[in-house]
Length: 138
Image (tube, rainbow, N blue to C red):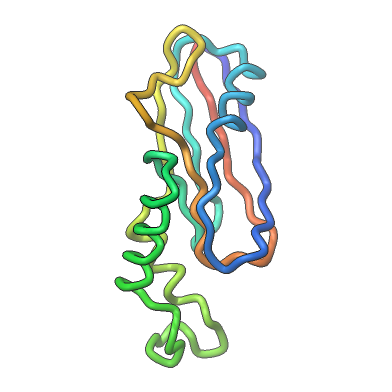
């Protein structure tokens, strides 16, 4: 059994963004030499997310508006967590969008359905954050 680990680093200048990281994860898979197994891709920060969905700008806009409606950034005084901080909404958005994605690897490829892509969701940007890619298999 092979094991591979790599960190992908991001420094998103905006407060919120969705970044397609599928190509970076595929590059990790090629580097790993694994042809049958699993990939774990997880955000290593509690105000960011990794998820799988379609790479369509309208959908991303809808997700952003929906999340902002569920947990609006302002007024920051609305949240108890924001005593001395301003990112309580980002923690809530991450809770909804999830921490990680697990993807099957078959014949050296991501075993995806139609339109599936991997995304890094940033909800409290403007500083360096990382995503873990862990691959195990043969």
